[in-house]
Structure formats: C-alpha cells, structure tokens
Length: 184
Ligand SMILES: C[S@@+](CC[C@H](N)C(=O)[O-])C[C@H]1O[C@@H](n2cnc3c(N)ncnc32)[C@H](O)[C@@H]1O
Image 1 (cartoon, rainbow, N blue to C red):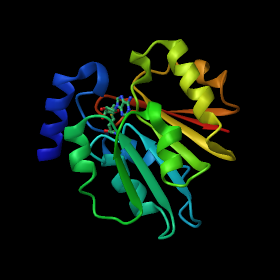
Image 2: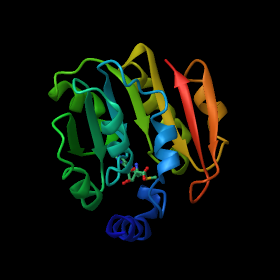
Image 3: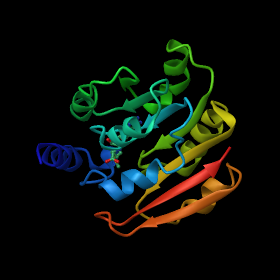
Image 4: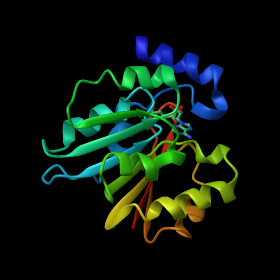
C-alpha cells in the first residue's frame, strides 16, 4: 500500500515523466517478463523501473547467474528500487539516455533483453526513434525489446525499427495496458 501511495504522489507531481498514476499490477508485470528465460543466464536492462514492481517479478524468474540493470530517473522511486536486496540487481538513478555509458561502466557490451516502461508516447517521435535505433545495437541478435503502453497506436511505429512484433492486451491492469514484444 505504501508503494502504491508513493507512486501516486510521484505520478501526480511529475505526470509527464512518470506517465502513470498507478504502478503495474501483477498480470501486467508477468506479461512484461513473458519472454524472459528461466533456464539460462540472461542479461536484462530495465528502463523506467519505477519502484521495482516489475524488477521483483524478473528476479523471481531469472537464474542465479543472471543480471538485471534497472534504470530509473525519479530519485524517490529509485530509492525504493535500490533497496531490493539481490546481488543480481544493479539499480541506477540516471536517465535512459546514458544507457551506452552505463553498460560500459558495468563492463557489458550487449544485453539479451531491453524491457521498457518509459512513457515514449509523451516524447517526440523523432527523439524516440533516434534513441531506439541507437540502443537496438546494444541488444544481441536474437534478443528482445519489450515495451509497455496504455494505447496500441505506437505498435506500427516500433515495427519500422524492429523486426517481427507481437501486441498483447492486459485487460486486468488498472488502467488496461498493452505489452509490445519485438525481435531484434
Ligand atoms: C509508467 S512508469 C513505470 C514504472 C514501473 N516500471 C511500473 O511498471 O509500474 C514509467 C517510469 O519511467 C521513468 N522514466 C521516465 N523517463 C525516464 C528516463 N528518461 N530515464 C529513466 N527513467 C525514466 C519514470 O520516472 C517512471 O518511473
């Protein structure tokens, strides 16, 4: 309950940045990590991790040798995220724009999956496109890009950048949400 209220306060204060008033519910979190393997070591980057609601699900599913680099801009939400006690998690209070440098600092060249809840719908399309084209190169061939949205309209926009894609609807979330999965 404390986390829900904290998220609501940050959402009200910074709606353009946070992009939501409610953190993702369990069915949405599970859908966001649907393609994450539970039987082999995997390196995941999570963008816009908030207070770590999806991170908890990720860490429960991943193998002991896996790694999660979770990036969150909002210091209050990051504060809760960084309190997750798991040696596989690196919680970074920074902007997604610095992803290349963040991975370099961690000695990571390429990752298996990029899982994003960044409210890209609120950013100018050319800026999002530039970001995705740059950061696609950080995902291994055969890897995945997963994006959360509250409307389906940007699916075709992402399909111009990534190869095959699938669109999933999670009706049981408040508000109902879409999970977009793309192959790299
Ligand atoms: C829709 S919320 C999702 C939070 C959480 N992952 C969830 O599913 O409930 C989007 C998050 O992205 C963060 N965010 C927005 N812009 C960002 C940026 N440039 N870099 C890193 N995080 C950012 C916001 O602070 C917010 O926590």
